Image (cartoon, rainbow, N blue to C red; front, side, top):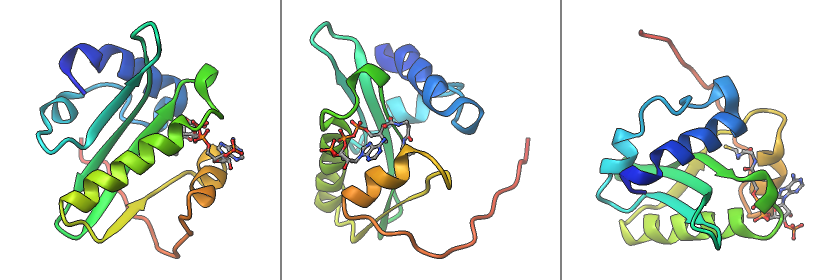
Length: 129
Ligand SMILES: CC(C)(COP(=O)(O)OP(=O)(O)OC[C@H]1O[C@@H](n2cnc3c(N)ncnc32)[C@H](O)[C@@H]1OP(=O)(O)O)[C@@H](O)C(=O)NCCC(=O)NCCS
């Protein structure tokens, strides 16, 4: 992901996640990522049609905000983005890939189809600003 992609990625995330995403407010960390874990895909016209951001803590790779533009879905693009993320994580020495999805939503069937299984955890959060 490069700086020029940021506005289109922010718009895509707003569309896909509304108030549950990072609201496109700040993509500086994704753009500055030097490990190649912030990915975008563009359509034939050069327009952003998918984006995903990853983080690596030394053991687990975390996947955030995978989004495919509505008119580009069900063509295998989400799967390709995730396979590329998994490859990049593996190259960094990552042993396990984790992510969270809303209880209902496209993500459940999608990640299930890619071999991800739900794990019982309590997910905590706190607003600090
Ligand atoms: C989830 C999402 C990323 C999937 O992207 P996509 O490019 O359409 O996915 P793919 O075409 O690679 O799908 C691969 C497989 O996943 C499954 N799948 C994907 N979307 C599905 C859906 N809405 N319902 C049921 N199964 C689905 C299918 O098995 C599909 O294979 P098939 O099309 O041959 O049946 C996309 O729907 C999206 O951006 N949704 C909104 C944001 C979101 O929910 N992100 C994920 C959680 S953070």
